Image (cartoon, rainbow, N blue to C red; front, side, top):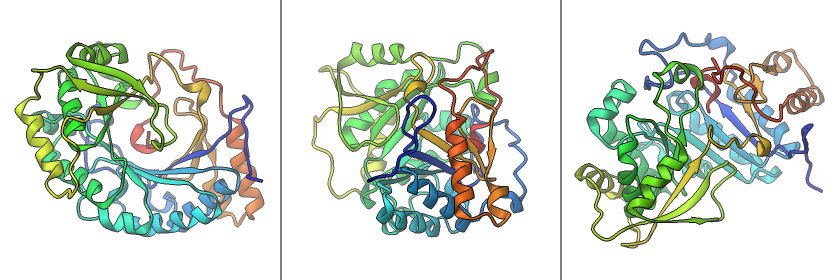
Length: 357
């Protein structure tokens, strides 16, 4: 019989997000200030063996999906060795091992990550325009991210999803991302801006609702809800989108698709609908169905993305605790999950760069 761990509201907890670093090579405007944030002391960051031990015990409690995040996980040295160790948990019940990355360092290591046992990747990308990308990331290279997406497809890290945080500054690119998905086989997920950390103090009016995003796609093509299998453990709802005759992408979207597919041997069938998803983080809370815990890079369990409560599992682990004690801490984190977030002012001061989303 498969082990289960159930929270106080009857939700089975099957998903663990693991932040391996609070460092990032981007300074995205909604994630952190331009000068960055002070990094955690090196000694406080969990070692790979410690992460693997916690993950092993989480899997023994019924966790089936693990996502490696950051910061930017690929800035941490030896990340492939951690992926390999976590992939070894598939014999114990782990079904899905994935990673979220900004994609800028992905191209050279995509095949190594696949060989180590990584199943798939999500890539955070909010624009297909080079000048806008530089401004949003404060200096990133769009070409390297697109090459990373293509390398992930070529390596079989599929489905490859692009996570697009939509704001008033990039909402005009909704159609371009739809065309990119249609021409490459990438899955684009449009995400409502959450007032977390630095995003919480962005100028009023930056938020764009999912309904507005759907309207823009629906005005320019057919948008039909679908329920495809094998797309992971998250809260996205998916749609097939096909543009009306005469609706065309911008030159930038066409160029981006060319970069992505440059080294992909099997190209997507021409004319096949795009698969796009929507994550309604604000307009329609998915808290009642939340199935996850988060492990921060410095060894704390966050039961809820919005709640300030954290359970210190790292100190317990480093005190020489037996597995039974670590399991007790994991269960206490599950028990601490609220039904939904209750941020009184709608803004959480927690930084996404440390929690990993």
